[in-house]
Image 1 (tube, one colour):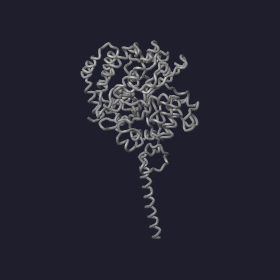
Image 2 (spheres, helix red, strand yellow):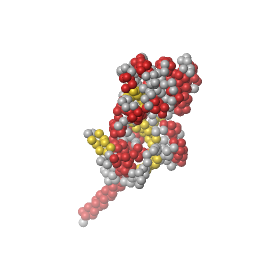
Image 3 (cartoon, rainbow, N blue to C red):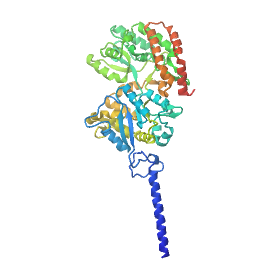
Image 4 (cartoon, rainbow, N blue to C red):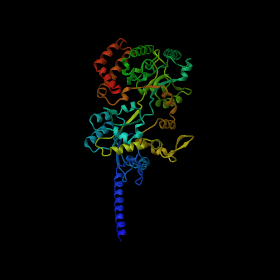
Length: 509
């Protein structure tokens, strides 16, 4: 009888202990929000912070708008891509698009941020918006969250690339790789060069002689066309023979402003010589992009600096008007001082910002960490395998149904160079991009640092001043000696302080 009482008592104690363990386990599960696993999954001690909750967390995401429309019966929150994202991540994603008009979009964003009823995640390309929010203290600092909940995200960028999203040693936005870092190249009529007896152009002198040969062969041909009414970019193939064709670069451990380099004055002398001899289009000063393209398409011009993405349409239109004409991207000639190479686009893109008012900052980082993998990036880029694309010989081939999910661009988040190149190949753009990518060398330091108030405030004035003086010197409206006047005005506008601010932001000095 006594033995039975002891057994009964022991059983009660055991039951209480089991219940206590059960309660503790249930409480422990509340910390496992947002890894995309099912509710019944067992939590590994090393991954408990990323295990999905029993009830899906709703994440409000605000993104930019563009021209793509949703097919009938679908919308931004009801389509195959976002439904697949919800399934794969375990989050109830509610996506909203900003108005298409940039000014209206900025106004709406400012109202949202001021109201305190903010999205959990904002995805934009606008550096000015990011800088404004950082300086107002409206964004969540991410260093600790990235360490605990975003290990896959942290490895996607280099230390230098993270600088562009940092302020006072704190990261305030997640960014992604921009695979398309190449922009411009030297586009030339291969057939015209051959007819003029011009072989491979490797040096500054050979470039000059090639332009002279083109003009001598056919005086009606414009050897080098440009659209100087919109700035100096179309002369980058010429400028690159003297100095890096971007405004700010790192040289010998410090940031320098390239228009102040001694080689910049040498560029002006050479470009003025080409213009005076009729080797640069005399109408370039009033020409815009459409005028430049028309001169290439009509067969009037032989060379210019253009973006790789513009070449396919130009070549197609030219071939229709002049069968046998052939456009190619050439390697930029090397200057007498050894300079060569075009600018690179920013190697990072987008700002993934978590407002300080969000109640789901940790879950937002966990969500981003879950979509920063090739499988999900691939799904957003191409759709569902077997429905929207198929793989042949290791390459992705689009199926007809892919045309019905053009709206998938709205959900583009992370990217990789490999997947970006696959998309270009799928569209037939890879040969043009690869030809220019080989010569893309210099990245503007402004793209590598967070927003700097003095730079943002002053930089456009400095660009306008540079364009005004350089264009006038190139076209002969001002003598080369006016370059010294330009340098003096640059200093008066506070240009030296801008260089110092960029040095402080990039080099910490």
